[in-house]
Structure formats: structure tokens, C-alpha cells
Length: 389
Ligand SMILES: C[S@@+](CC[C@H](N)C(=O)[O-])C[C@H]1O[C@@H](n2cnc3c(N)ncnc32)[C@H](O)[C@@H]1O
Image: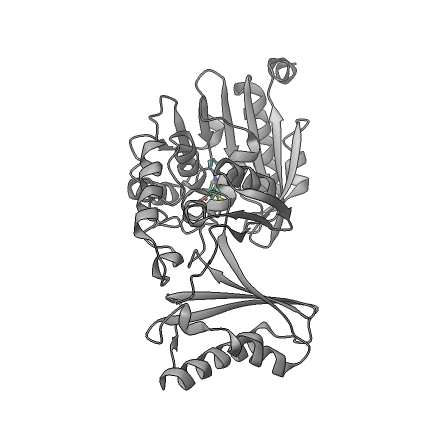
């Protein structure tokens, strides 16, 4: 069998949501990655198999970790079929494994990614049939082997997807409230805020609790994949259990207890029940306190601390209600959060202005397809005085 990576060191590509590239690059550097290059919604890096496993297990802002295998020039449809068929697929997975293909294309001779996936699938299946007399099956839901194709103009990058399902699926989110944030985005927001896990953390519109759980995981230094049972690389022919166990042991050793308060609240009892279920699933229900309350009634502990929240954006709420909700949030911050830092994510730029505070920092992030601003406020004591005037 051909090793997936013949030399110790291999090139890898971590994908992430737009705006989180620098946070991911820092995470990879902390794990010992070399030759790091920040790209658009991705970070390229080099490292060994240990790093491949730990990047999957530890990186909070990565969506998937790809292992580029081949690059082909594709000028015609036939080039696609013959190049893919020439790969020694039988070295990488067996005919009894299931596989799936994820294709993205830009500016290429092909206009449909579905067609590229289909031809790739045919080429792989035909090769297996010629070699073994059997065809492997496609399973788009839970495949044993995930293949990633990126076709840009006439250059095709073929990669193996070492993550399997997207890394935002941490394994703790068992109950959904309305409009939950992606776990990767929530973790990225906390990292962008600069919170060091040493002071009070508050989300007063916590919904299903995603931001709170990610905050507790950061404060306790729990690996992002702590609650996840499966990664794609575990089904690879050359999966090395000893290296994986080292990665798991390092994940246990790095953990620390927290002495800070992590507090969440939400006006909706049913959303809070979702949060409760997720907190329990993450076994963090003793470390995070949640209660039903309108944020307007919150009295926070003494500073220092950080508030990070994801209010409603107005897709389902009347404009007047949204305006008064953001005004109320601004008043709360000015009157009761002096000495804190506060961060708000929203796609509604007009509503964000209603907070009535001058931002110290802004980031552009995407919540799904929605372009958002993630805006930070430094609530020095002066803003409290200003609010009283
Ligand atoms: C976009 S959702 C938050 C989703 C959350 N980040 C998650 O990942 O599940 C907005 C939340 O704000 C809550 N909310 C709306 N008005 C509120 C208020 N006045 N006080 C507290 N929570 C409020 C809603 O019940 C909803 O759960």
C-alpha cells in the first residue's frame, strides 16, 4: 500500500469561515505547524501525522483539514475522467468502503460541481471494477472516505478530507433553539474578542448556549473535538492508533479547572431548555449558570468581564421591535457593564447603530450566508457617567 503521506512531513490545508483565517493560523502555529500561509477561507501548513490528528482534534476555528494529494491540469471532460482514474485509489481505500465526493468549481470548463462529482465517482468506480470486479458504493451521509475536489480554471486539486463531517459538529449540540450560531463561528468570535478565559463571561441572549459552551471549552482548554466520536482519518487504511492516543492524552493533560463565572440568560424558556440539554451533553452544566430572563433585567457581577452576544437580526422581528431591542442593549451596557468589554454580532447595521456606543473594533464575519459585523465596545467608566447625564 502507498502511504497517504510517504514522507514524515506533508502539506495540509485547513478550511475556515471568512474572517477567521488569522485566528486559525494562530491555532495551527500553537500546535507546531510549519510553513503557515494564510489564504482566503483557508490556511495552508505543513506537519506530520500527529499534527494532522491534533489539528482535527484541537482547532476551534477549522471546518475541515484537507490533505492535498494530486494536482492535475484539466482541459476537457476526458482529462477529468482519465486523471482521476489514474490515481491508485485501491491504495487508499478498499472496495468495501463507501466514499463521497465534495466538489467546488470556479471559472472552469465545467459549470456544474454536481457533474464533476459524478464523473469523478464514475472514474473511481470504474477503476475498482477493472481491478477487483466490484464497485465501491457512494454514501453521501456517512461515507468512510471523503474526497475533496477543487477546480479553479483548468487546475484540479484532489485532496482527501481527514475530518469527515464538518468540524463545527462538535458532538454536544443535541437541541436547537431558533437561529443557532455555528460552533466554529462562536469560538472564532470569542478568540477575536481577545478574552483570555480568566474573567467573567456573559451571553444575555444565549439561545441554545453555543457561545457559552465554546467559552467554557476555551477557559477549561478542552479540545474542540472533545465530544466528537469520529473523524474521517480514523477510517483511513493507515490510521495510526498509537499517534491518535498520544493526541487524546495531550488533550487530557492540557485541561484546567475554571474559577470564573460563565453566565447565560434568554427571554425564551424553550430556548433555555435547549441550552440546558446542550450543556448537559457537553457535561458543562455545573460550570455554566443559565436562567430565563430578559436581558433588560440583568445585573452583572463586578468587572472585569466580557459580554458576547448574538441578538435577533430582524428577519422575523418587526423593525420597531429590533430598534428598541438594540437601544435597550446599548442602555444596559452603558448603565450596568462599566469596566466590561462587550461584543455583538449582527447583520443589521442600522440596528447596531442603535446601541449608541462608539465601537473600539469591528470584524466582518458571515453567519451562514448573512454578512455580519462583529463589533466590540470598551465600556470604560466614562460611558457609565455619560449614560447618567
Ligand atoms: C439569534 S438567537 C441566539 C442564538 C444563540 N447564539 C445560539 O447559538 O443558539 C437570539 C436569542 O435572543 C433571545 N432574545 C430576544 N429578545 C430577548 C430579550 N429581550 N432578552 C433576552 N433574550 C432575548 C431569543 O429568545 C433568542 O434565543
